[in-house]
Length: 69
Image (cartoon, rainbow, N blue to C red; front, side, top):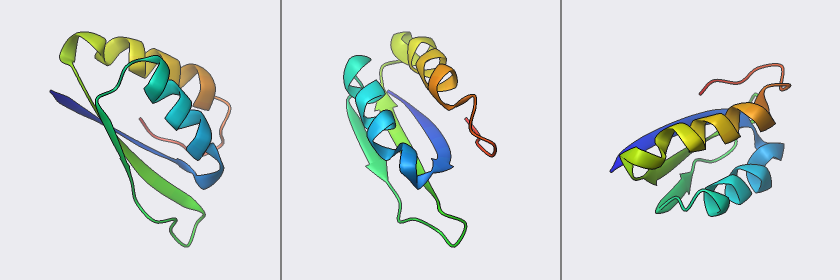
């Protein structure tokens, strides 16, 4: 299994969950929102699905001003 960590505005919570479901991620964990309005999501998935998950996340979150994948 591989972990992908995403840091994004808390408003993207539902989008990240939807991507995780679409890409058959095994499990997902979120941190609490920080003082900047962001939280971290850790997606646990199979190595062979990693690139598809990254591509989906990048497509949705690319327009966010401050994000990291």
